[in-house]
Each structure stands twice: as structure tokens, then as C-alpha cells.
Amino acid sequence: MIKIIIDNNETKTAEGSSLLQACLDNGIYIPNLCHLNGEDSSSASCRLCFVEIKGQDRPVTSCTVRAEAGMVISTDTPAVRQLQNSAFRLLLSTHRVDCGNCPANKRCELQKIARFLKTDLKVKSLETILKDQEIDETHPILNYYPNRCVLCGRCVMACNRQNDNPVFNFARRGIDTVISLHRGFDSQECARDKCLVCVDICPVSAITLRLET
Ligand code: SF4
Ligand code: SF4
Figure 1 (cartoon, rainbow, N blue to C red):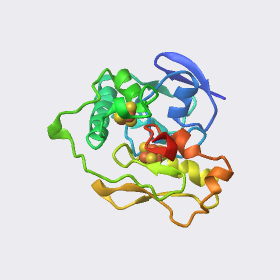
Figure 2 (cartoon, rainbow, N blue to C red; figure 1 turned 60 degrees about the vertical axis):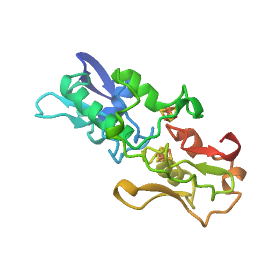
Figure 3 (cartoon, protein in one colour; figure 1 turned 45 degrees about the vertical axis):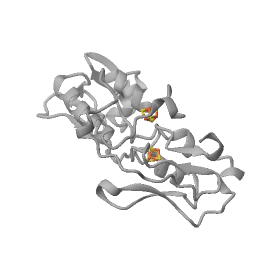
Figure 4 (cartoon, helix red, strand yellow; figure 1 turned 90 degrees about the vertical axis):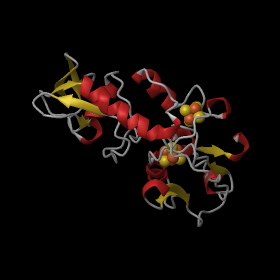
């Protein structure tokens, strides 16, 4: 274990752990979506987990920096909050907010982040880029809702970790990026193995068991 300072408190963390994991392990919440507990690396795609490190000019994504003994970290500075708010607004610009009809309601990580940042979930209509994308029902037991998906990639990572023949991958590019469901899966594999890690891991219920809606 090594010692680092987080928000003026001395804390211990495992050598080699990311700053994000070090904070979370010590009960300090940092908004994050693309981080998968237990994974060493992260795609840093959600751009939410900024912190400041003493001696560095600008905030860094805490999931991409390894903790080093003696580091001094601040998780709550104006620069950090500004970057987190901008990233969150951008993320919400492509998310259809319809909490009343959503299975994630009350356990949704977007709601948690909005509460933490003291901001609204609804962005101005001028800032939204919503598309009518059809629900993917090609999997035998799962549905995928692209309008809910925040492209965090957790399902891709988790399914890769769990299965030799993973179901999920990213498809298309830029604004059109979606999660695609691999067509070659054994149709009963997920149910037989009682895996369903993707359903558990998705922060916004963009993947559901078909009967759940
Ligand atoms: S994913 Fe969260 S923010 Fe989006 S509609 Fe569902 S509950 Fe609301
Ligand atoms: S389906 Fe869920 S877990 Fe997968 S990328 Fe979209 S939001 Fe993330």
C-alpha cells in the first residue's frame, strides 16, 4: 500500500491502482460511467472523472493516472467541476430523458451524477441531438435501447471478460456510434450460463431482459 493525500486527507491505496479506483475505494465519489470495477485500464471515454494533481497545470482523468506515493489530489475544484459539467451536458445531449418510463429510474447513474453535480438532467432543446433509433431486438433474450445508451462501453468490457464469444461491440462512427449485438452468438448462451452481466452493469438500463421492457 502507498499513501496519497485526497482532499487534504491522508489515505492508503494499492500501488498501481488508478486514482479513480483509489478515490472510490476510500469512499470518495467521482462521477464516472466508463470505468468497470476491477479493470486496470479504462477507455476514458466519458470524460467525467477529472481530478487535479498538485504540481500539474490542468485536471486529468483520474481513471488514466496511476496512484504514486505522496501524490496530492483534489477532487472538488472549480476547474474539475467545470469540466465534469461540460462532459455531462454533452453526454445528455444524445440521451432521451424519460425517467418515468425507464426501468433505470431511481437506480440510474445519470440521476446520481446530476444530483452530485447539482445540475438538471434536461438540457436545452437546442443542445440536444436526439435521433429516433429503433430498439434492437435481434438477441434471443435481450433488448438494446440506443436512445438510452450513453456509449460507456461497460457492456463490451464486461461481456469480453466473461465470455469467449462476446455479444457486444461498438459499431459505426462519431455521432452514429451504437452498440451492436453480435449475430453469431449461441442463442441460449446468456440464459444458460445465467450471465446477464451486461444487464447488471449498464448504468442506464439500455440493455434489458426482454420481459422487463
Ligand atoms: S436512463 Fe436515467 S436519466 Fe435516462 S430516462 Fe432512464 S432513469 Fe431517466
Ligand atoms: S448499453 Fe449500457 S453498458 Fe453498454 S455502452 Fe450503452 S450505456 Fe454503456
